[in-house]
Length: 469
RNA sequence: GGCGACGUAGCCAAGCGGUAAGGCAGGGGUCUGCAAAACCCCCAUCGCCGGUUCAAAUCCGGCCGUCGCCUCCA
Image 1 (cartoon, rainbow, N blue to C red):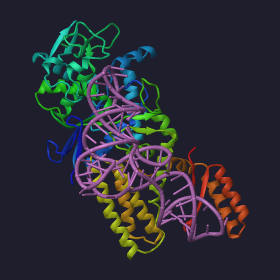
Image 2: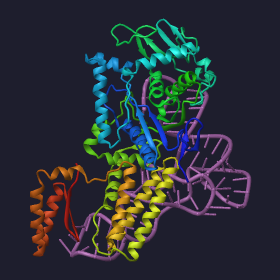
Image 3: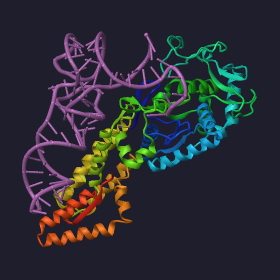
Image 4: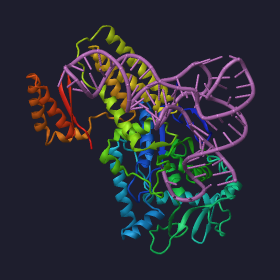
C-alpha cells in the first residue's frame, strides 16, 4: 500500500505521485490577519501540519509554504476603526498567529510570504494575463475575464450560467460578465496603495495566492490546500488565473478540510460564534485540540462542544498512561514477545490508516491498541528493551499526529510553588497509612482532592497531579 | 433556486459489497485497607421506504433530516 489522497478536483481518491520523486511542494492558504485567530483556523493549520508530518515520516522532503493576507478590505476597515496603520495591524496579528502555531505544536513553514512584499510578482502576473487577453482594465481596476477561460468552474462544479441564476452577487453593470473578478483594485482616498502599470491600487484577493505560489513553488505544486469554504470562489479563481497564465495544471492535488462546528454551525468570524485559540489554550492543551480533530476525518466537519473537548481530554490521559514506567523485570518471555508483536501490528495498522487519505481516526485506534498492549505488558511484569521500544513507538507515532503527550501544564506549574507542601502532606499521609490510621489518611487524600490534587497509590509509591480547572 | 457533503450505540467516530475499529460515558470483575489508575469482560445491525445481489451500513432510486458553498471566511 502507498499513500492515496482525495483530490477535490477529480472528486476521487488517487495514488499520491509527486512531480519529483521523494519531494513534495505544499501551498496552504493562510489567514487574513485582522483579528484573533479562532480554533477553526487552528484546525486547518493542524490538519495540514499532520499531512506534512506524515509525508516527512514517509521519507519525503517537504517544501511547505503558507501565506498571510496582509492587504485586504477588512484589514483596512479594522485599522481605520482603531486608528491604526493597516500594515502595522496586520503584522501584529500575523505574529500572534505565528505564536499560536508554535503553541499548537504546528511545525513552522519554510516560508510565510505576505501580499505586501510580493507586489512585483503580482503586477507582473496581472500584466501577463492582460497580454494574453484574460484581463481587462476598467476605471483603474483590472478584472479577470471568466468567459475566456473555457474550463472555468471545474473545481467547484459550477457552470458559468448556473452561477448566475439565484446568485447574490451585486451586479456590476460595468463588468463584461458578472463572474469576472478583480485582479487589481484602483486606489481610493485614504487606502494603502502600490504603484503599478495599471495605476495606484492593490491586488484583488485571489491573485495574491496564485502569484506567491508560482513565485515560491514553481508552476505546478503537488498539494494545494485550505478550508473547503475556499473552494469557491477563491481556489476556483486561483486555478483560472494560474492556468491561464502558465498554460499548465496549477496543482496536482487539491485538499480541503471540513469546518469546525460550534452549536451546529460553522465557526466563523462573521457569525461571531467562535472560540479563539487563546481562549481554548487557557483551559486545554494543544494535544486536546489535535486529538479532537484527529478523531474525525479531515474532510468532515468536527463537532465542538464542551462534551467532545472533555472526551478528548480523557482520551489523552489514557494515551499518556502508556508512557508510565515499567514495574516488573521480565525482559523476555511470553508477555514480552506478545508486546513485541503488538508493536509491529500497530505500526502497520497506523501506516495503513494514514495511507488511506490520512485516516487519522483509524491511526488513533491503532495508538490505543498500543497503549493497551503496553499497559497490559506492564501489568504482566514486562520491562526491558521490548517495553522501551513499545513506548518509543507510541511517542513516535503520536508525534506524527503532532501529539506531545506531555503531562498537563498544571502539574508543571505546581512544581514551582506548591510542590514541597503537597509532598509534605503526601508523606504525612504515608506515615498515617503505615500506622493504619485509615480515617486520617483518607481525610488528607479527600482534602487534597477538594483542592484539586488527585492522589493515587501505585506499586512504585504515591503519585499526585493537579487537575486543571 | 444551483452545486456539494453528511445521517453508524447516551456522546464523538472509523468502516464504503462478505456479515459493525477505536475513544468517552455506563455495567460487572481482578487488584487495593478503601479509593484512583491499570488489567479482564459486557454494551449498536448502521435515518426511513423500496430495489440490485448468494451476500448491503457499504451499490441504485425515493423520502425525511442536518450541514457547507453560491458574499469576506480555515
